[in-house]
Length: 327
Ligand code: SF4
Image (cartoon, rainbow, N blue to C red; front, side):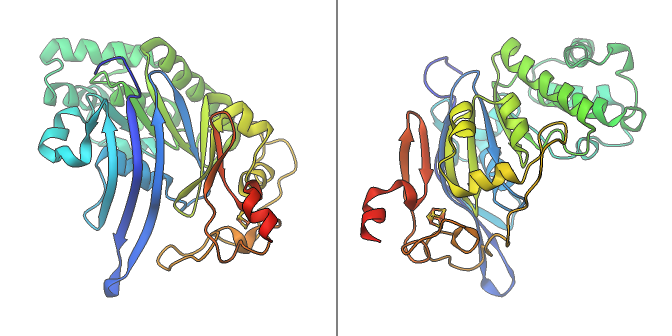
């Protein structure tokens, strides 16, 4: 990878799932973003908003029932145009993923060290003794003693397995790491340690990070930038501080009210209603049935993303003077 420009560019990414009866579920509906070297971006939203599907599409790991369109450029190489044979050598080597649920990332009957060594040997990063030494170093890097490398996954605590899953994702020295809900099911202290670890690794190794979470305080604590997804679209994105202090989309504001802080403090107000079904066409703003600020054009006109501050955009008619004056 060279060091100039964004490492990862996502342009107009769509993902559809085939459903029974010839129907389709439009899970990701044209998302765009860039990720620069060493940058940490949080992808946030409720369950089912398309965030996990989006990063699986970026990794090229969608299930056979899904199809994707758009452009995913990894250091300038369009992964969709290049095709699987050209992309395979770069997956795990240049871009890697920490999957949701650390226990599922490991084969329960194989030792942790063997599972970290495997991608290294597959991608010819290291083999034999050198690969095992590197696996021990990676475990040390994530705060696990190399002496524990020969243990089985069930011999690790949940926090240790999550750390080991991060070590495994780092095995081939990627520059971009996609982490899908890496702290789910961990208690708050371990959660804070894993987030601190991810932040530290981005600094030490110059890693770029996409952190997928439903938890806004985690993004505030960890990321430089945040993108909020709703019903398959990015509805607001911008520098974390700006977005957190001045959210410009009603969904982002409600998401803050619906989330306690990292330590479970604060009154939690749930968002009324449910997200729309994505196997049906949505007219107008997808958030309109749940939005307490909806006005005349919202149910019928799809909002555009407009800049609201430097590097900060929101997809809401409230930020569109033409819509406000016409209503
Ligand atoms: Fe609410 Fe309308 Fe903005 Fe959608 S476009 S978030 S319905 S105000």
